Image (cartoon, rainbow, N blue to C red; front, side, top):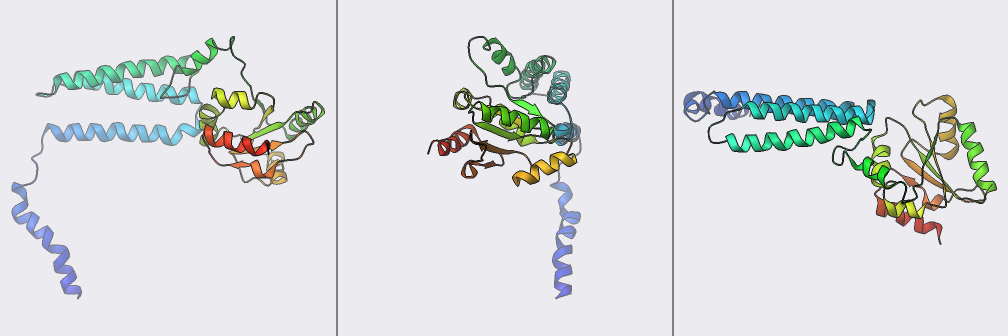
Length: 249
């Protein structure tokens, strides 16, 4: 049996060594192109991995730098029959990289919509925006919740951390949506910040039975959580609005 296994494993190698050289592609410029493609892919993977450790604007600037480097590289190529295509791709990457760089310089964070925050700033005077209050001190959080309870307000607790990728995604795709903004307009929007994971922050998580962010709680004006509406993990805007419907029942 082991002999048959050895023959089966070695036979393809013998066939390739004997007859495969005529079928294998010849080395040339295409290998250099493949090498560069994998190089850019590795740089993109590195940015993707460290994005949770860097400020959003810096991450956007790194993506912009990568696209601009690819654009310059494509513009310098002279492939036979592909000159127009590579130039066109280079122009597209260069334009988008420049837009991303402008977005990063002005405080943007979304690689797909790098200038969206500027549109939000322009509309700030014509539409009301519910701003979150980010609090790292649990004692200050209790004070804010007590004040909201005294005012008869619902409290939306959105547990947040700088290293939480889903928190940043939801900040953009959920709380940035006009429908969600309108639905939580009467609530006190508080974000307990557990980035530093201090002893007091760990105690706060334990008090509410939370493993970690993102977790969203709804506290009624009597200071009690509506457990059936608790959100654990990342959700989209429509799913978030469905949880809000539970509060109306």
